[in-house]
Structures are given as structure tokens and as C-alpha cells.
Length: 354
Image (tube, rainbow, N blue to C red; front, side, top):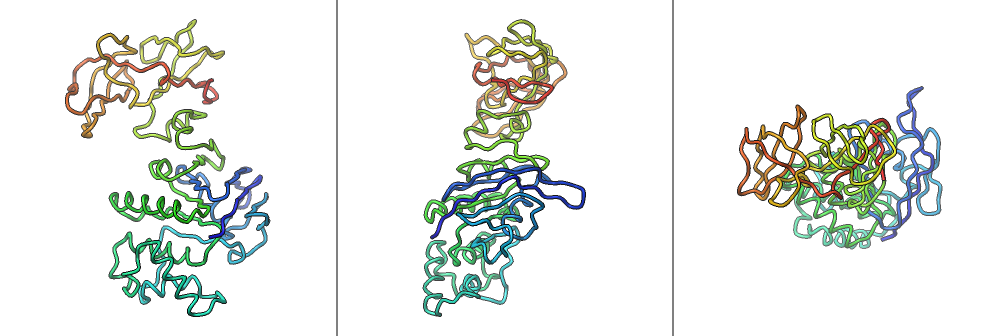
């Protein structure tokens, strides 16, 4: 398959006087799997539709490979798009549905049949080619939609929330299918989702968006371990990162929740928000100096671990405990976190500090 780079330069989109995308800049490498993620209305699907040629660009430039495609029709961009709605034809067999992607191709019939067989083999659908969509599971139908896109041998695959109609177990299965597919064929993929778990498990790099702006671009590890601001810190990771406001006093921070904790590094601001992921905030063991204390209000067993919802000075804090033995509601417990697990943010700008 042909692979291609994708470049978005100062891309904007406005509907009348309302600008919804504000100067998006992004470089997608040859063969890279990039996921656009963010809450509803952040501009991720609009960006994808502009790239596909389904939405007009207000200003800026889109390049695929060495071609500027701003004024090209969708069919001239050598892209293939897979939507949330499978949009496969119920009266056609799987073979004919996949082959529909070659409808305007100048390939001979034997060449088309060979191409359909190749794609079906990659997707593990060879034995299903003569079935109708009504005889398929949801995951199999989604594979048919992917096959119809693949059969055209595009430079770039665009996926617009393709898994959101599936149940939880099937979504997990299809995530693996799509990741394996990318490893096999190596085509550039740009994938849109609102689900941060999908983004973390699928992407080579994640593009986190909010209100028409890119907040951070990085590998899953980078955005999880080194979020650039409070929005990214709370959006990536479940449960969301604990955020506790405080005031700098010397080399410590006096938290509104009550405790005073030592800062992991210096900061030249007065108002600080401390961020700690629930997975990093645990029940203190013997010999560990507690970071804070709280009263357990709710216990959520998850098997291998248990989430603890605690009241710390009138503020809710989520911590974790081992799955087998854990505190009960009403218990007062000490909590501990390693210094390197404590994130610091400027409360006023919401930007990460150091």
C-alpha cells in the first residue's frame, strides 16, 4: 500500500462569524497512527472532514504527500474514510460490499476479484464473502466497512469514531483488530474518538483537542506522564487526576483541603494546583511519610485494585488500594505518593510547572 505524510497548516474553520477551529498545525508522519481525541465540540471530527474534503476550509492548507489538496474533490485525495455508521448495503453480499470501493476503478474484473480476496484475507473474512450483512455480527460489519476502504489502496485512512456503536467487549476486540491491521499494512491512519482509552491503546501519537485548539501532541506515555496543562492531565487517565488547589509557603504548599505538603521542585508562582493520579495515591505503608489523611466515604472494588473515595478537608480525593484487603467506609487512613508522581500546575494559567 502507498503511505503518505499529512500536514495541516494554520487550519481554521468558521460557520458565519463563529470560528470553531483556530489555526490547527499538525504533521502526521508516513505510516503513523495518529488519534484525535477530545470532548464533544472540540473540533476533531470537523478537522477530519476538512481533511477528507467533506467540509470547506475557511483558511489554511492541507497537504497529503507532496500535494496541497485544499481544492481537490474527496475522490481526488486518495483517502478512504470509515464512519461511525457502517453504511454497508444490506442487499449486497460481503464480496459486493467490499468491491463497491472499486466501483469507479478502471481495474479489470479479475483484478478486482483478486484485490477483494486479498483484503478479505487480511481482515479474516474469506469465509464470509458470500454472506449478507444481516448474517454478520457488529464487529464483522465494521470489518466490511474497513474492507471497502482498504480495497481502494488509499494513501491515508480516516476513521471517524468507528467503534462507538459497538458494545464494550466488541469495542475492545475491534481496537485490537484495527491495531493489528495497521501493523500489517502500515498505512497512515488518522482516527477520531472521544474515548481516551481508545486513544491510549491505538495511537503512535495522540492529539488532544479542546474548543478548537490543540492542547498537546505526544505519545500515549508523554501525555499521561507529562501533561502540558490541567485539561490534558484530567482528560487522559481514568479515574481523572486529583486536583488540589493550594498556596506556596516557602518550599511547601498549603492545600485548601488542609494538609501542607513539600513541593517536589521549586516554582515561581504563588497559587499552585497539585495533581496526583488515583493510581499513584495509595494507602501509606509502614515507614512511608504520609502525604495527607482522609476519611473513606466510598469503596469501589475493581478486582486487582480497589478505588477509595475519600473526604480530605471537605474535598473529594480518589486513591487506590490493593484488591484483596482494603479500608471500609468511615475509616480514617493515611495516603502516600512518590514525589515524582506529584504534578504541579499554575492555578491561574492552568499550565504545567517544570
